[in-house]
Image (cartoon, rainbow, N blue to C red; front, side, top):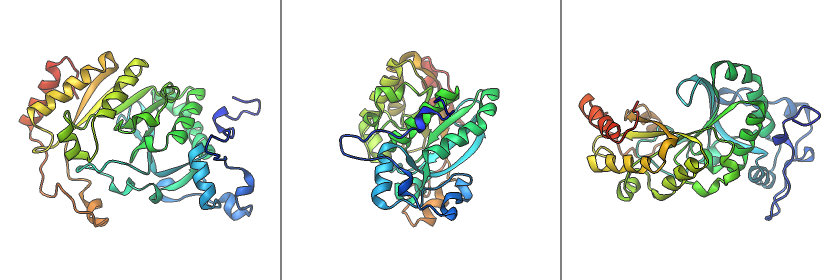
Length: 306
């Protein structure tokens, strides 16, 4: 904390090698209307830097002075331990067939939120977090698309003694430096498939960065909850599941458990609303027998399965 009581993560970042500059008061419209405006709905309570022009928004995004956020909520035992503030960031490089939130794919569809506003929100709830063993979780979209903002918020949270959790595919592995990883207490790591062909079919991306990110987390001594979405006819092949288990073994003791998440159709209305062709229109969730088989495969490798 500084002598004024402001977390050090709020201090303006230095200009980087590309010449990006941080947000300063002169960039903002000075009227009381702008100063007092808050975002409503899913972002109620966050001050929005709507007075920034395009150039300054890009600069502030690179420095982490703002982040583009889709929404946030308070939940329990869903996105990490205890009661948590889960922030859904906008922007994702993958196009998973079973995505529940296609409305988070484009960063520009989110709302810009001040770093200071986010940190103040965490500060407001920190007593609740500490009492329940909870904290702040960044999800998405893909939160690793905005590493400067997320990592600066995590740094401020750690200074408050608040638990931090990153929910990610790990696909943007190298967006995160080792220093940024230091401020992660827990990672909810989506290992979406166990071989390159299936992974590309599911996501449109490649598998290797996820593996490398999990291994970097393990080397750094971080805890991992692996998430695997079980989709009949897509990710349920026994060999694919075996490959996921073997990948998780490379993370060693970092893996606390594996969540086998059954596919469901709750996200389908969003695809329809956005007029995006939905590839799993007629897909069904896994039955009890399939779920038990997959759970046993992971258990046979020594993992606790939920």
